[in-house]
Length: 75
Image (cartoon, rainbow, N blue to C red; front, side, top):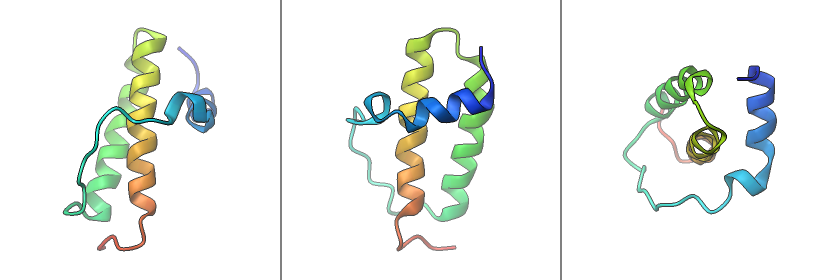
């Protein structure tokens, strides 16, 4: 697979990250919890065996990154 920079480029590609497949209420998660999830995702990116799996994980990552940006997160 590619480098972390390639993964970040793929995340920025909105055609791969829009229309996340399900609606989740993450309002009970604090910033630390979401950061931990994002760290776990980063560790799994190099393990993806197909481009489809990688794209799906990048969608999940983008979803959690957007959630992290929500201003009402507790620290």
